[in-house]
Amino acid sequence: MEKTVSEAISYRRSTRVYKNESIDSEKVKQCLVNASLAPTSSNLQLWEFYHITNKETLGKMTKACLNQSAAKTSQQLVVVVARKDLWRKRAKANLDFLNKVYDKEGLSDRDLKRKKMALDYYSKLIPTIYIDFLGILGFIKYIVFQTIGLFKPTYRQTRLSDMRIVAHKSAGLAAENFMISMAAIGYDTCPMEGSDTLRVKRILKLPRSAEITMVIGCGKRDDKGIYGPRFRVPFDEVYYEI
Image 1 (cartoon, one colour):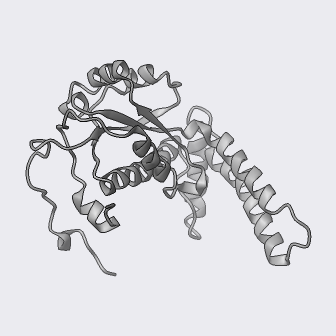
Image 2 (cartoon, helix red, strand yellow; image 1 turned 90 degrees about the horizontal axis):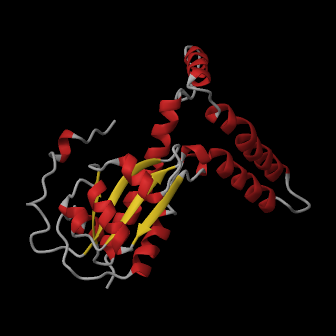
Image 3 (tube, rainbow, N blue to C red; image 1 turned 45 degrees about the horizontal axis):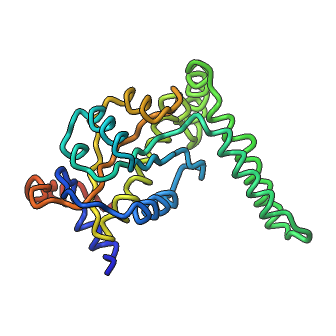
């Protein structure tokens, strides 16, 4: 029986040794479908998921992941990739979707207003935020927005580095959706920061502009796969009610 959300969160542990037991690729793929339903900044969905099942490629990836046991013993791997460079394509996809949704006669004034706001958002605001040239435009926008912020609340994350962070945050949310979905069906995962991201990109034949958010080992936990009891900083040290 599939676990509840709370049960899956509690069950999920970073598993560093997996049983030599195959897992169902289709089930893993469905968990990646769940990943694609994660919240994402401006609904741009600047992510891609590479699901690796080929043994030869798994071997190459193990080396690129510094021969960690979480990669070496994994039955499959998932690489979560941030694609900030695809913002134009994803903005256009949103525009096409909105035009289709609102392609009907007799729209109310409220719907007409919503349509204009949404179309302006993707055709004007998103390009204003994302267009850059060698970081120069981003810095100029940063100064402009910081100046505006002296007088009223405004969006401030406009530099090239800021937009990279935005893309990785969204990709991280998708990765968590994936790992909780895996836990819900009794599969285990381990998100790995330790990897040679350049080699990973070469293995996956990714463009230079793509960035690796994380590599996730997948399988069923071995008895020695969890390296000790769970430790968390006391909740009252991180929780603040305002």
